[in-house]
Amino acid sequence: MGLTGMRIVMAVGMLPVLPIFFGVYWFLAGEKDGTQFGVTLWQGAKEQPKVQEIKKKYQKELKIYTLISLVLFLLALLPEHESLIITGMMVWVFFVWIFLLVPFQRANSRMKERKREFLASQPREEHCEEREEILIDVTAAGVVKMKHSRKSIYAGCVFGFLAPAAEVFFYEVWRRPWLPDLWLIECILLSLAGTACLFPLYLKFFERQRIKVFTYNSQVNLQVAEIRRYHLSRFCTSMAWLTGLFNWGILCSFHVPYKWFPWMVEILSLLFGMIVLAEIVRCFKKIEKHSRKYLSQELPAEEDDDKYWICGMIYYNKNDARTFVEPRVGFGFTANMAKPAVKYTMIAAWAVLAVYVFGACGWSILEEFTPVSLAYEDGTLTANHWKKVYQIEQSEIKQAILLEEEPDIRRQRGTGMKTVKKGDFYSDTYRQDFKVCINPQEPPFLMIESSDGGWYLLGGSDGEATRDILDKIRLEAD
Image (cartoon, helix red, strand yellow):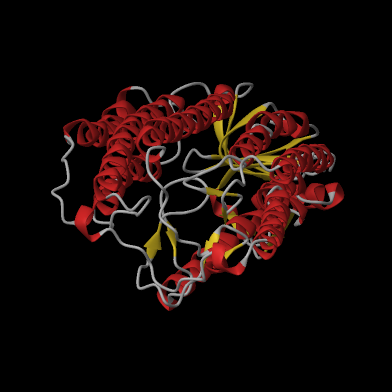
């Protein structure tokens, strides 16, 4: 692909993450169920100029932080090594995710301070004392819930699983030379199909939750709960089908020419991410719009538990028996971090994610910066690249040819970096498959035909040493 191609792929694939994050965090500035920036709104808060000023300041800071993130993205593309670019992009994504939360945390602190000032200015009898109990609408919880048809969402899940089933057929009749083994493709497709099954599970989990108290009117609480359940059901159905379509798109990308594969995957991922974001916003807006018609007619239930919300996002309440609660920002569920099981699970999950992501980055750096070596000892030719890659006995060498320049080869599977090419490649010049282990910047190279008909293209980090190895092979052959 080359360094320029790598930069283009990273720009196309990773840069859209920034506007997506910006859109999500901009969306968090809105009011949700009587809270804003993770703080329960007090009487008349919406109309207060200082509250409006907090929102404007948040939006201004978010724009500045986004511009800083854009500059950092461009800087991450500057290294002259592919592995460093990949590592820089991974670090950048994690950094931006946390960095863009700083304006929200600052807005949360300002809202809490403004609320304290307001309550301190009121007569003591006009504002309620802090409550320790969790409000539960027992009447509404006892009402029989409406059931939504699950046939469509299950059909979407089945549609997603048809892709790995179809790949068994396509792999044989429509196979590209660069394709990895069938089991690896099946693992990828089955993983994506399995993701679609999370949506019906989410719905079942949602229906088992206790109805949230919005007002002291049980019928209103029940109606709002049904509105949420209905729109979330439609959202999950859409997501199951979208995931299935994405899975089929990935299947098709495995059967295009190799040069188009990364571009097709990038475009599919970008479209999928944008559509998912649009679906989330649309679902949330509809829930808010239809719920407002009922909630605007009732007085809100008095429940102020700001002290249990760290930065307005993380719920930590030892007095709450619930493991999952509704978040104050976004929608879905968030876990009660006071539960030891939740706490340790989150720590383990983050540890696994960090090891996986940065382990892959470390591996790519090791691949690119470890020198390739070629050795010939005791009648055995060995190509090494931080471990033994290929080993050929003298008796298995049918012919050995010295090439002063790298032939035109393209990768089928393996590593293709600026300082190392390793794995299975195909040469249009020789119309042969090659097993390759070379540093493209260090010619000459040995092109070897083995007695079993296989071809190798091997090299080291010292051109003179490669010539000496060829002389030894020819001398022993004579």
